[in-house]
Length: 320
Image (cartoon, rainbow, N blue to C red; front, side, top):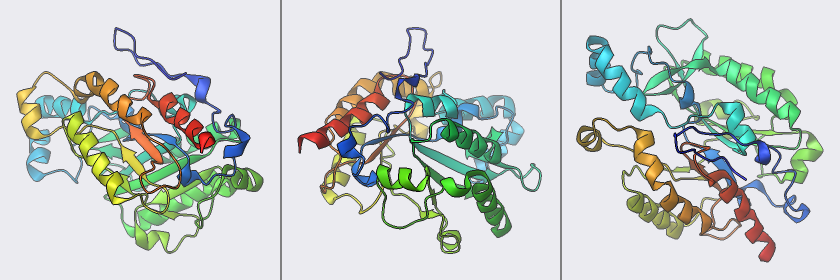
């Protein structure tokens, strides 16, 4: 189970987890989703960042200026520290990922309604095309459920927000689960619903019942894995949120680290630390307890057994 990374560094998707939700023990079909263990991908769409893209508007003016004045130097550096995933969205879903972290933006040079994804630079993929790809995958896997977190909204006006919500409704339609109490798999299957869509813009959520509020994400903002785990353990001691939430096991570079490691990348920084992070994952337990985990999101899906490790945590619920 789970994808593996070869000695050459090639990531491999794995379809053995493509239908893991329907393959769960039937005793877990009536457990609310926020008490299950669900694998997610951090910055899901960075596998298709555009090397010719301008620096995003949300970044510092200095970085934007360097991107314009010295694009041949600045953009490759930004790109290698912005890429958190190698597998495409369908490959991630096939591998078992059920939480997708979608950072939406409008590129200033783009056409009026063309929305892209962003992580320091913009993606080649359009939001509407990607949502359609997810919808088509769900049609082929009718008992799988995805949690889509639409975030950031760099450059979106009120009109673009409404355009995006219209696209969401047109593409997913009756697949969308309206907000309310967190449902179980059995409840979703009975209703024919497969998508919980969180939207981190409260004013838009208030106008649309099909949207859920932003899902809390525990982001450690740490270079060292030991410090990241220390942060996550601190958050667990403080108590879990009441609904769906994400523990991010993604490392984050800072300027000092980049300057000290000019030939490296986020991938080179992350991969050697995956065994340490995976050991923490395997110790976690889903459920209603205050120190239980729910969604666990990571970088470089397919590099190790992360997805399968998160799914297997659900077996612990059967021992209670």
